[in-house]
Length: 390
Ligand SMILES: Cc1cc2nc3c(=O)[nH]c(=O)nc-3n(C[C@H](O)[C@H](O)[C@H](O)COP(=O)(O)OP(=O)(O)OC[C@H]3O[C@@H](n4cnc5c(N)ncnc54)[C@H](O)[C@@H]3O)c2cc1C
Image (cartoon, rainbow, N blue to C red; front, side, top):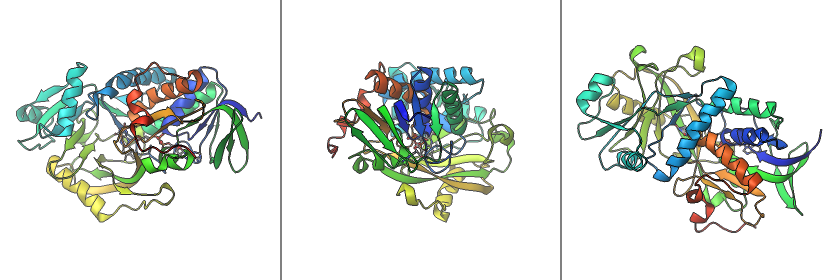
């Protein structure tokens, strides 16, 4: 088998899977190297569901990318006949000048997105499962919902392989280098060569990208699935996704409707988590055992906002965020490699919904040297103290 490729993708998780698909679909000779299985639960993509929304509170500049991401989710669904995006609607709540409420309103106004304001009485008619403090505003984005991460990754990788990509699992990249105009990538078994290199290594990006480790903080995040008092009123179809900017706790609690195990797989129950960077961790040595404190925070949030939402804990799991200093992604060429090396990293706990557009962007940057999509705000230059590669 040839070991020479047009392009090599390091890390076939969320961003890497979609990147391999877009490259293979365009006829390039692609190699994807993944250190674990596809998918797996050691990085950032496990856990059944990821929220997708357009009225982006983090920054309105993400909205054009989200519009493209929604289109591209439809495209992969049509190619595979497999549903990935589930529009359950998303309920937002928080004090009027909290970042969540201010940011959703700003993006919705700027891009004329459909976001409804609900009174507490309207909320009670529509979703009596919630108990929201009187001083919080309530917004509802009907086209928001969730996407299924493991299924999305599998579908992208399956389609990449069908289009000719070579994808190797249990193939950890140990090192890469540029020799003359060629990129050489070493695993324990082989050395491969490529004209271009794409690095989509998630929590391990700092070890593969010269100079980036100081900009990326990997944190351990705990997610819970619980049994409510009764299942019916929290099931998909009855109950939306939700995000609540708590007035005391840093960050936002969020959750999903209960998904039927027969269609979505494990875990069973009502999923809840806190969106806020957790304990800083080394991805090779993460403490994956959730603590009583992790569990207690989630139970407190459920008791406060979803009376009836908690009767017992079913399972707690850990997952990893890779945070940049400003919590915006980094998508760029690696300086000093003559546009031969592109990377996407630092998705800061909100990247999954974008994989369908990031895959397209990475393929275009690597093979055409540019993208038509507006990603200037994600350039590495904004992080002023980024050191030169050594
Ligand atoms: C608890 C939790 C909840 C989240 N909720 C949401 C949400 O609701 N909505 C949303 O949009 N986003 C959400 N996210 C964020 C989103 O899941 C991540 O931003 C996204 O998965 C990051 O993708 P990635 O490709 O960078 O990382 P990954 O998916 O982890 O992929 C990186 C891959 O690179 C591989 N790799 C690394 N080093 C090597 C090497 N040396 N050789 C070979 N392979 C290597 C890894 O094994 C891995 O498979 C959440 C994340 C977590 C942890």
